[in-house]
Length: 302
Ligand code: SF4
Ligand code: ZN
Image 1: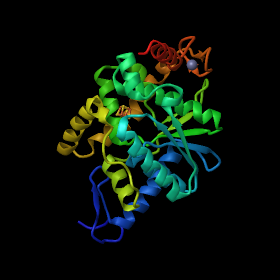
Image 2: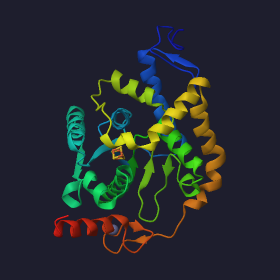
Image 3: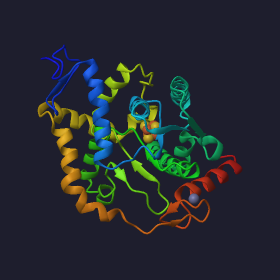
Image 4: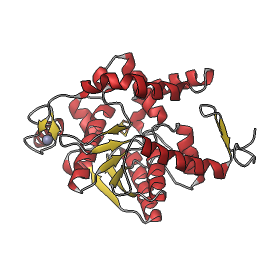
């Protein structure tokens, strides 16, 4: 097999694109494909101020890197979740990456305004990922609005998107299916949210990060072991091995044929939370209720 462009030895073969590429051509292809996805879904323009939410992992750091390389105004946002050493190490990776890039990084410490994820998990008896997802969505939106960003970009890749799609199809969670799109437009107190890497596999983003010397955290969050998403990723990988191209087709055909049928289902009446002003289906939003719980717990010595 040879690189489809220069005929040199390839570094990767992507069966879903029937494409083998060498080191240099893969990087160029990756950047062009990112730009193409941004345009295809109308994600943002060079006028937008983009807040990239970074975790220290390969996807989010590669996204921040490539957006800046493509000339977009992209700053980073790190939410310190206080998940022990894992959070400390990932924060250090993000900070050193920002220094190397000379890019603006905003850091917010969850413990300062609420409590770290392990404490929230204990207090709510919820799965760590469920409470973590809630505080992340809330903070990404709130911080972006407060600081005047027009778009929030996350590093979700094809494996993330296809596995969560499969999990939700299994439960016919139609409300979720109505939100599963690479662009969620600005509305009712929500900043526009985009996923420019939604068509890249994990392997592709990891290779791009490695080839560009991006020092990312390789260890998984300790709570990831419980995450059902890993189980669904494994299932999809087995299907992909048997029938290459299925993962991308499953996701793209969903976007084309299924999403339009469900997109109206996502709508539920939202009002600004009476305490913080963030959009909420109830008078007081879930995060403000969580805050009340934390305050009570600490007043009572937990
Ligand atoms: Fe949060 Fe779960 Fe991801 Fe850990 S694995 S960062 S707890 S969502
Ligand atoms: Zn609130």
